[in-house]
Length: 343
Ligand code: F6P
Image (tube, rainbow, N blue to C red; front, side, top):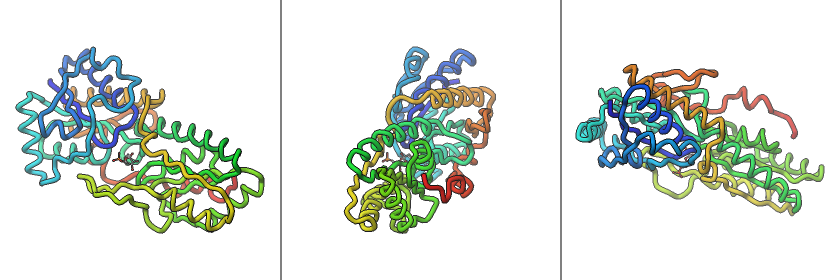
């Protein structure tokens, strides 16, 4: 079997580890051959590939980003039938029998449609946002949170030196997992998520209380938090999957805090794509490797239209369609854990 691998959507630490595990296990256990599609679905549409063999992938475990490149190209943008036909004809021209699509809800949504149209495909979930409903975790999230926590630890010391409120904006799009875990691990005084209304007066009161104790307030805000009642959107066009670029929540919050705490010095740090870069954590290397191994076993067993998924401590295969149905956001129960506490 000749398998084409692609990585689509926003990159994250661990993508290369999936590719490495899939190629090594597929080659050694099942005699599969591999080819990499360049820049996600764009490479499939254009038939642009790179060779992938054991020697190519062996050094990849610790390498951040994706050596295959990524894009937010949507092959179904101009119609499912047309998109599927183009994908099918490229696969057949290249002698590719099956696809391993590594991606988030958009990439896996395309994989689902291809599967429904009879294209042999399996998936592996990735995203720093950790917002896919069919898996308990995605790789990339652990690294992103650790990077954000490291940044907060540093910002806290400079904030203390200058008696400033430090506001840290983190990615996560419509899900607050990165903000929730960063806030908890960094000991933030205020953590704002997209899932809850923002009470600006309560934020101001907490900031004043922390200052009164002689400490520098640390505020973590998710890029999707609705500081002014709606997500802060940058003035940019929608991508091929209909997403706008979020940004500005930290600045909006700074303005509101300044209005409620006169004379306070504030600084905003937008961590942005820093959270997507760099070498994966040990936990992400392991999860990515297990997903790659599982996806190959699914292909070998003919268990198509499935995605590797973490259920508790086990990696299992679930239908691809389940991955993209509902966004996994932070439930009330997780917010209730810390509600009303003054850190
Ligand atoms: O989905 C991953 C993610 O990093 C989100 O957290 C963020 O909103 C978005 O991608 C940013 O996308 P881009 O790389 O297109 O700016």
